[in-house]
Length: 189
Image (cartoon, rainbow, N blue to C red; front, side, top):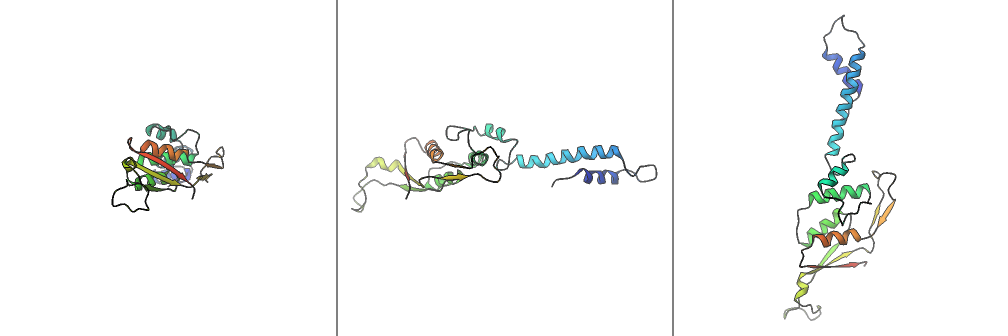
């Protein structure tokens, strides 16, 4: 909760001794109250800065801690995308399940599904594709043809109104998938 200089001035007046020797209006206390209110409000700001989802002044420090930008997060992205990248990096726990990759994509602002492939066996239905054993380590990322991310209320005036594309999605999935696996990408319906 933010405080004003008047809030602190009233508190300082109440803390001093009472009596006719003390002036009703004290300019020294007003000066101290202004500084105390400024310090108090900066401490309140620090609470916002401690959360990467609301940071502004410490954004570059958060990016340095998270080793961002990286190959999958270019430097020329919006404020919201930079915050999302930091939050995603901090929340990442790792995994190889379809749910993990769907969660990673959602944190980046993409809505995807994952298709897994099974090799052809004697128990496979005749209508299924005949896939060899190498397909056991492949999966397909199904995403909209173009993902659009819009300017938000928190975006600075210098940001583009709209960005689109799936390059960040492909880069992030390729960076996180196991080295022996193969990711295919299918865009559109």
